[in-house]
Amino acid sequence: MHFCRYPSPLGNLLLAEEEDAIVYCQWEDTIDEQMIEKWTEDKEQNSVLLTEACHQLTEYFTQKRKTLNLPIRLNGTSFQLLAWEGLQQIPYGETLSYAGLARQIGREKAARAVGNANHHNPLMIIIPCHRVVASNGELGGYAGGTPRKAWLLEKEKGHNKL
Image (cartoon, rainbow, N blue to C red; front, side):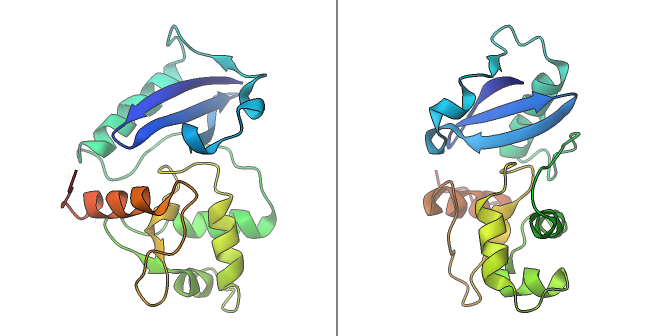
C-alpha cells in the first residue's frame, strides 16, 4: 500500500491507495503509527491516484469542488457499508441527524450504530461523516475532533472562520 501526507488547513491527512483505489483518508494525528509501518510512503509523488486525490482535496478546501470523485474501496461490515453509502448522499453544505441517516438507510432504530459506523469511516472528507449531527442540532462526535467538524461544516456553508 502506498500513502502520502496531504497538508490540509486542519492538519495533515494521511491518504493511502491500494490496487488503484483510495482505501484510507484520516487525520494523521488520530492514527496509530504502527498501522502505517508496513506501508510505503510516496515521497516522490509518483502515484497518479494520490496526486489526483491531493489535487481534489485542495479544490475542496478552497471551495472549488463540492465532492471528491475518486475510485475508492471500502472494507467493513454490511451495516457499515450501508451507513457509508448513506453518508455519500448527504449534499455539500447540509447536515443530517444520526437518526435521520438511520431512517434514510432503512434502519430506523439504528442511530447509535450509525454513529459507530461514522466513527470507523476510513475515508474522512471523501465520505463526509462530518455532515452528521445530533438530533438537537449539536455537533455530536467526530473521530477527527469536534473543532475540525465545526470548521468543515462552516467551510461548506461558506463561512470559514479561520
